[in-house]
Image (cartoon, rainbow, N blue to C red; front, side):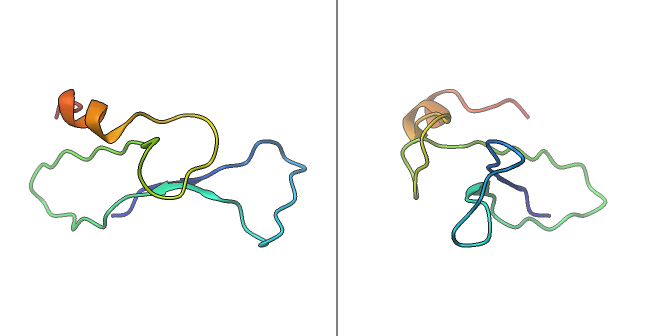
Length: 67
């Protein structure tokens, strides 16, 4: 499994690279028959940044989402 998203500000937006900038992409996880929790977060201080949204890595580590 892989989770990700692209950023489209409106339906008429043009991208010079011919694709929308990624909001993020998760690490790949193997799905099995056993229950597993999966989370995804947009970080504001890791990787290439686009304006708006996200939390810092420190904030995520201080208060991780529940499983």
